[in-house]
Image 1 (tube, rainbow, N blue to C red):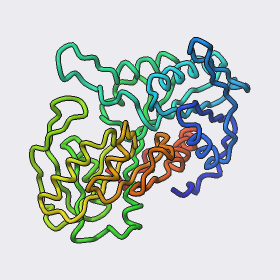
Image 2: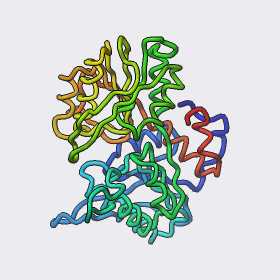
Image 3: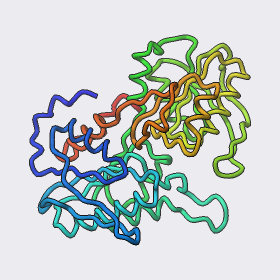
Image 4: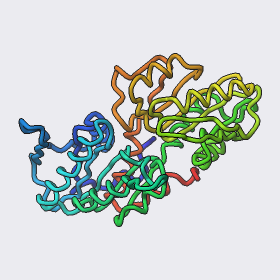
Length: 327
């Protein structure tokens, strides 16, 4: 993403900090914004408790904290809460949490009796700790925005994936079809299909239990097509791999997949590399690391999108106009 033509606005009074969850992303966003990354110390006491110290003045500043609540999820969440409390007591003027990946987002509703709505609980904790604004990317369920009583800027990674696929020559191709791996993701798939000027297909499935998937039906024509499955995240890889196998059985000639959040739990990287999926495209909203990288994987940078959103929020400019062509 190129910097906005209005990038001449001063970023005076803004400070950018990053927790331990994805320090590398913090440095990349700071580089995009051409501002220094703030000094923050986050260590542990001997018993494992997290200790945070803000090493520079934040009084009166517009503070942005970059912290995806990714693995180890509980540590990332707790560190974020402690950082918020530290900055609130340091008299920051405004506290914005930039959490590209929202942990516990899949627990966004009650499915069975006596289940918690943990996504709402996390939202309450973050708000009570002092956050005054949230920036997130491709929430697992858009209703999570309503769990907060503070403004939420919901960003979309789809245009970045779409532009990459266009550069790869996949626009206006008669043999290309975008596939939603479930009914809930149809909106995301439709938006990508509109970018690529191609039709969509839908995989209808059910989940008998977490991380288990049964393919029920495929809606749409995939025979002789190159399929692009797009989802918000890949965790164990089971859903994507089973979906790809089902598409090939229906006559697809190739299946590639794309996602925003490359969670890659357990041996997901190896499973994807060994699977029928031809390539995997993702973004670096969570740290992937060399251990989880594999030959079929392409990683697209998310820092320019986050940096531009942060700049616009600080200057009180529109964030939604970044996605005028993405519905």
